[in-house]
Length: 211
Image: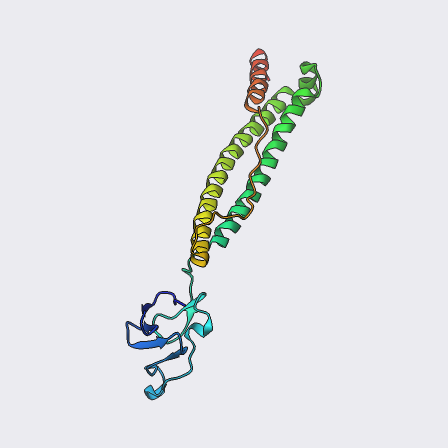
């Protein structure tokens, strides 16, 4: 088993810590030389286990004491989890975006007589609400595109690492078989509907500039 951030010698299975001053045997799980930081250099061939027996989550470049390994290599499962989380966030964002889109459609269809709708709601107030809502929808569209790009990158890394792991275990190169979720599609068509609504608002605003 390899240890993080260490120079290893393949024949004896030794690792050299502290710029090579102290050799550690991964087979014996013991050092071959004393710890020079022990009192009076009397550490001896102590029973210190490298990184407290957890070389994946800890590292010990000096041979004196373990410390957390914050630069741990990311595995296929890490990117699979990241991909799944991005899918969940993407779907939540799309659900919110579509809810706003539905509210605009509903506002335009409450009454076939648009004049009554403007009289009830107040033309200026409705125009501002529509404009703000459309702006938010466009911002959400941009956010959704960014999430999709990030999710695809995470999934691609997952596939690459999964194939490497499978190859190391089976000496073959199978494709990753774990099921993949997906980010749902936004409602279509939306842009034409929004454009028509805003154009209608602008025309009415121009006809009555005092409002």
